[in-house]
Structures are given as structure tokens and as C-alpha cells.
Length: 110
Image 1 (cartoon, rainbow, N blue to C red):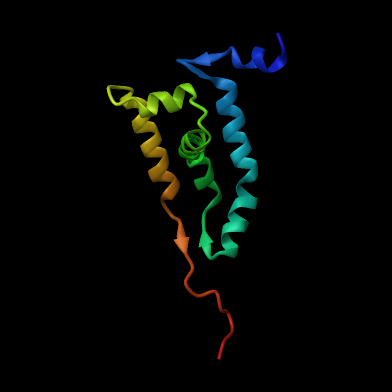
Image 2: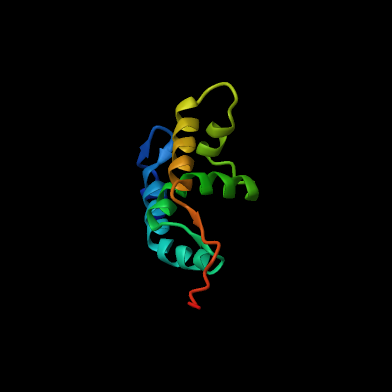
């Protein structure tokens, strides 16, 4: 058994705890870089918002790549799994909160 398989065997319901830890930690570490990149196109996204957006971005990226993970399948299930849908929706709302579009970045005074 390789290391990744061993780490992914620890589960909370049907979801690997290792995947959550790596996803949230990765997004936390990338958030300053992502916020700086969006600041260049005049969108101000607080760093904590990236952590909230981890699950919704994960669902979207898995859908785009066709990788049907247990959470993606549960999210798309029309006949149940309302807890997963609620968690994703709440994460999306918290992630989109406090995002600002800077209309004027010209700091020259006349």
C-alpha cells in the first residue's frame, strides 16, 4: 500500500479526510497569490474567501474535467444529499461575500 492510499483510507462519511486537508491547506497557501492576481484586474477578493470557495471551486473543476468524485456525485444527486448541497451553497455564499470590484484605481490627484 502506497502512502497516498494509506492517507486516503481515513474517511468522514464517504469523503477522504486527507483530500479535505490538502485542498483547504493548498487554497490557504495560494490565497495571497490568487488575491494579488485578481487585484491586477481590479477585483478585490479577501484571502479568507478563497478558503470558503475551496469546495465550490472543487465541484466546478471536477465537473469540467469529468472526474466524478463522491462529493460531485452527491452534489448532482437530485433525490437527496441535501446536507452536501447546503454546505456547498453556504460555502459559495460566504466565499462571494465581501468581494469588491474597484472601478477607479487611478490614484493621481488633480
